[in-house]
Amino acid sequence: MKIIPFYILLLISLSSTAQNKIIAYATGPAETIKQYPIEKLTHIIYSFLKIKNDTLTFHNLDQENTVRQLIALKATNPQLKIMVSVGGWSGCSFCSDLFANDKHRKNFAKSTVFLFKKYGIDGLDLDWEYPAIEGFPGHKYDAADKNNFTELIKALRKELGNDFLLTFAAGGFLKYLNESVDWDAVMPLVDFVNLMTYDLVGGYATVTGHHTLLQDYRPGQESATKCVNWLLNKKVAAGKLIIGAAMYARVWESVPDINHGLYQPGKFKQGVAFADFKNYFNDTTGYKYYWDKKAKAPYQYNASKNLFATFDDERSILEKTKFIHHKKLGGIMFWELAQDARTDGLVDVMYKGLR
Image 1 (cartoon, rainbow, N blue to C red):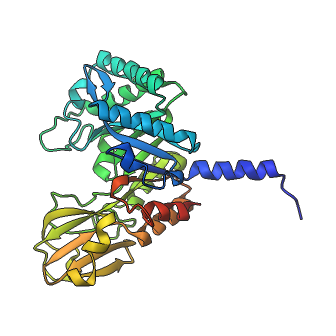
Image 2 (image 1 turned 90 degrees about the vertical axis):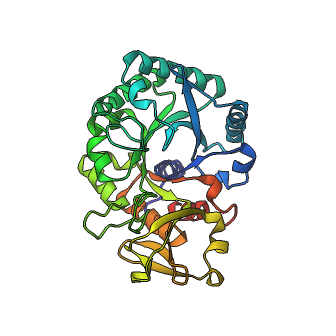
Image 3 (image 1 turned 60 degrees about the horizontal axis):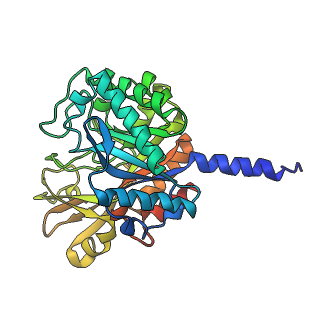
């Protein structure tokens, strides 16, 4: 029997930990964020800062103080990286115009480094939804966005060097993958990409479906598997791919009692945080739980009120962690921390599945 030296085992352990990132997008005050199992996270991406006069900055003093407190968490959580994000679903109305200009891109990149050095921030996550294709209703988009996004990444990496992390949030659907990003040019310059493999059936949809499924099996259906395989076929490094999970359900109303509401017409009603699942989805409120073994995704249906819900839960998260191990991916991220249960939540399930 060959004895493996301790230092080699340590390196293997550290390497494994590096490959299994657990990344939390987080909003709100530091007092709320601190109530979650921070020790089980590798990254917190605080969302969202703003851009004013080409400059990355805070919206207000509360945000500034929150970031300072998050940075302080690293003293007792040495594994933790604190990043900030800019943009978001409704927060990038200016992106197409701003990042079309080389001077604006360079000014923004320089301001980012200045902010990071001042506060001790570890990196930037860009959440432009979306370059070159339609995102939030009314936001400008242009075919030139695709190249301008590449130039923005180049400008940021030039200023950030290797001292800071650079990532971006990517749509988890084929139209984005095909039209929004020059993957060959961008991926060598970023540390990883956060694949938003949730909201794949969004609030504007008039037919129900799984919004954060692992496996597709219907024509035209999007999924985490389809997204990952597309990128792997583009020779993107598996270790740079972070799949997404949702800390919330999407609920549709006026859904007929056919196939337990799955793939039926309906109207989006509301979101429900995972922390509220036990109160919202139970026998007394009329919901019944179902598991789609093909999609590896759960759903609930309320036949008395014709309500359908799609979400992640403990079972689907464990399936996603198995997929991460199988594909040797970089890890998992989620939106967002404050929607998780503070004890026995999905972060705990992620940690268990990836360790």
